[in-house]
Amino acid sequence: MSKQEYTPSGADQSEDDLRLIWADRFCDPLTTAIRPWSTNVDTGAQAKATSNDLFEGGRNEGWKTTTIPADAFTGSFGATLYEGLAPDMEPSLVWFRPTEMSSGSVLLKKDETPGVGIQVSVLATTLSVNPVTGMTVEEQSKPTIGWVIPDRIPHTLTAFEFLRGLSMHWGQLRKFQTSQMDYTTAEVDETLAAEWRANLT
Image (cartoon, rainbow, N blue to C red; front, side):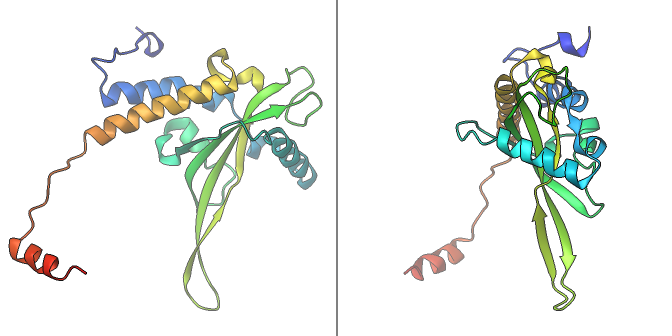
């Protein structure tokens, strides 16, 4: 039985089951679906045109951006998040934004179908040392990693359907992880507790 043929029921889901589905239904398909910026944008003029088309296509305020922690993505798609980033840049969040890709856009080849695709960006952090003060400063940037054209949305879904599934499954994983946390109440010395209460203002 292949990975794709197994979906655990609500009664027998484990974290391993949920992670297997996460990798199989989301991470792996995104790896083959994404058109990476690093291998498709060569010049400054092309970068500007690509950025303009992504910006214009994503201006619909009613379209929700899906945000997932970068460390949730492992394997090939996890590696894709680092493509084009400087060695000292660390992605912390991944943004998936529905984006209109129109006919004639530099985002599409001539024979590709216009429609709503997905822009993929990261919040990347760099630690730099200020040459004047010697202090370490955290700098952040939001580079685009790539985009998924309408024809390549995984599982032949719409961008909105796929992103809703992505968000729902990540929420399921987070809920499971939270339920496994140890919330044992810490023992507090009664003398200290009495002292704290006495000093309340």
